[in-house]
Image (tube, rainbow, N blue to C red; front, side, top):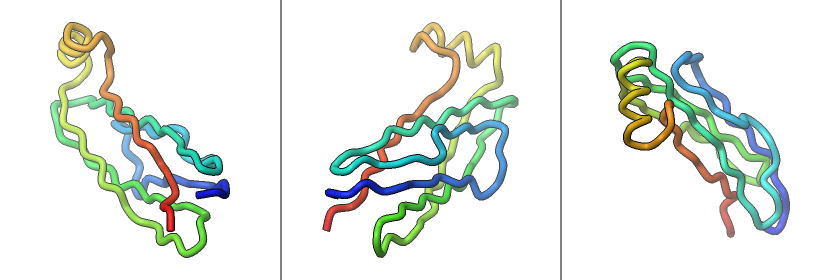
Length: 101
């Protein structure tokens, strides 16, 4: 879009296994913002986080993005990821871009 828009990402429930950053900011005119979602499980489990996405764009309807992570706790996971990918937590990069009309 040719205008900048503020955005906010609000987890609907607290989850110690997920971190989202930055949770708010500005999408520049004709641009996008990269948001990092980090998943750090403390037990062998599948976790879910409902993330409310809101833009200050005219007529934008907020929606909920369901983020799901399945993993293993610290030592086992970190060793496996370090061997395979060279890092110790699972990251997903998400682009936020206002829709064009």
